[in-house]
Length: 120
Image (cartoon, rainbow, N blue to C red; front, side):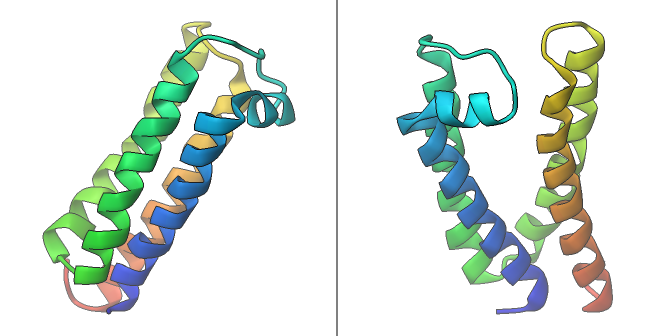
């Protein structure tokens, strides 16, 4: 497995943690970041989706599929833009941008490794 593939593979485990937390104990995570607590099902739906995405990151990361690795860079880089827009629209508190920063940093990590490996 290349270093760029490992970066996506490891990001998959971040998604496992995030997904399981949102699915099983969403208010624990929300409370840690000062976000409003909820009993709505939607936060658990987001957790389930993060958990489902984690499978792609882990399995495809392991297979070292260059196109998938490249696509994750663009998708993960765009998340912060949406979170900033959601904040500016007043839909969420600015702390949500921290999650976008994690995605952006992980995308940059993969990008730099892809570039180093000559895959870009």
